[in-house]
Length: 429
Image 1: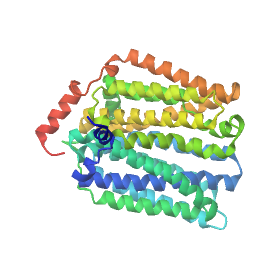
Image 2: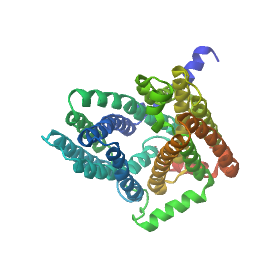
Image 3: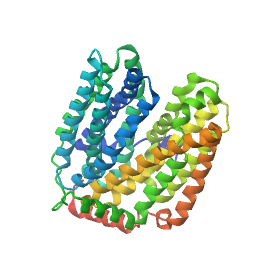
Image 4: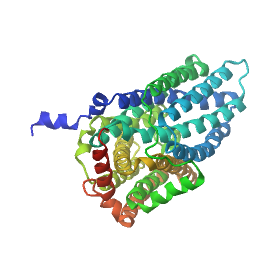
């Protein structure tokens, strides 16, 4: 293979965007949605801090949003297996647009009210948690089975574009024209995304559909635990994020350790830049079948890169390490997504998406608490370095415990084979 062919083989596969109009709509809607959401992600704490002058008040917003995220994430997963997923996307999209418009109206008042931000923030968390499982569970029904690796990578790319551009746009808007305009941008994005969701064809539940209930949620959890390959995707990610999540330490790292407060933006964007680079060169992922090993190795690289960032006082080295960590995290996310989409039956996919949403929320939240406690007890360097080392050890121990996950092979795994054969027999995407 020539060098040029090798480069072409690395390019992200855009085949699903060409072959599936509905996946194209999902991709565009997701990109616009994340762009607007990240603008509000900056505006919410900015406005709350300017209203209260309290860091504690800003921190409480996250606490207020956590319970709805957990409760409605699980319930949204159960609903995604029972109702038309297109209707779930449209209904929750309208709800988010109305709620964000309420934030905009509050910000336009002569004396905006902080309690409105808390109440609407909790309701937005609930609406987003209800929507996410349906959006995730819909991807496999819009593309062919062999296109799923490319579809997962493209979905990740759309999210990263929003996560990179959204905070930058939000930061400019709140400092120049205020929070109301920032919320207005998010409202426009939500309206556009919801209009795209409305253009999807109906996606009723496969078969009879399971009525949403606590019993159906428990059934999904039991299914996840019974499959050690799925359990590995959750546990490895939770371990990696809990042990080595340094984001909360970035302000102290920039100002007190690196002695360069102006580099804070670089620290926040380094991981996303690494993720974008990996996603843009993700063509190779479709040729990998040992997905479990790919997740484990990338999680180990994440931990090692974070550990290497801790002792350094060189800005370039730290940023490079964080970029490598972000890229490794994206590799892990891509292969975890492929395992989920290629092996979970459609009638269980919504509930499992709800559980997956909890796994990627609990790990980072717990990781930020761990990082802060260790930094206050010892130092920022010790917290970052020890977290990276503990991540490597924890992931290796998890892989040794869940050997079925380490040995997972998409070409022979019975769940992957059964789902591939079922879709081939059914025909269509």
